[in-house]
Length: 447
Ligand code: GLU
Image (tube, rainbow, N blue to C red; front, side, top):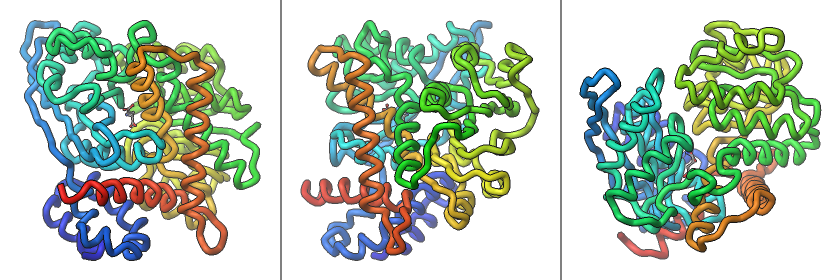
């Protein structure tokens, strides 16, 4: 069956699952040519099998808030694909979480994990629990209630969750504490993103942002551009934007915009170390407001309500927050203002129209599954350290992360170089990931 026919069937089957269909469409468009060159894939119905998750767990999560009121949320774990290793991927706590969102993320994760060169399958999970405005005790009670159901589905050699939007070190800590109590298993490798004293990898919190900047650096270098002195707009101010801000500044770029759901902070002279540290306080406050940065640093940051980071003229745009956060209109504004590079750090951060516009206007563009793979790659390194009961120094983890990002860039170049010599990073990443997963599925028979 041709990939368009597979897509049409999926559209008819899941008409309401917009994000999932968008993610599948992008991959199928990219791989069409190589798929047609491999009749053995078609014969084994590799694509038809690959687009469906292996299994989905859905559960009720009931907890009690600070006022003593009973609250009920939905929890999910989607084990998408285990062709190249145990299920691996984060947990997202956000009010907008739906099965469609987690299916798109699990699908993307499968290819992203394949790109890391480490043996990890793809998974995703989470809940429609909204951390905004919640107290620390409420977060803890929710995490414990969530793990009450999840613990039975996961294991260090089976399925290893980690963080994502709304889930950081604090939440992983609360979930791990409850997991131990329920499972009576003390193997730290069951979750990644743990604290440094109890099995966490040094640099895991920074890894997604650091990896994204290593990738961006290689992409620019390949195009003969030096990142030094370039202006950068980030979106969000969470863990990923924080790591990206540190590394971009370290590499000599100037981060002049961060944002939140409330608006954008313009920082004309570039973000400072104090401001980067303050991002962590903002994240821990659960207020979800970037305006707090301008209140704290009135001389350095100017807040504009209702605007995105993409309204600030910059050389490089790095979406670090949420899927579809950069629309075609935003791409037009960025390009009109001189932007020449956009690397997606969030998963599927750009809408298809924005990607098309960037590509048609010569903007260097790379997709999230390549750019942000440093996070899960460092999770993979954390699993290795846990299995060996050892802990590596920061330099060792950083060197491994850097070499993985370099390899991901090379895979994109290998599979994405076009006849005219330009590099299509979307195609490159999708084909490289697909070939690896497809080959593994083929070799493991019809299951
Ligand atoms: N949530 C991150 C991602 O989208 C990290 C997953 C992990 O470390 O397992 O890749």
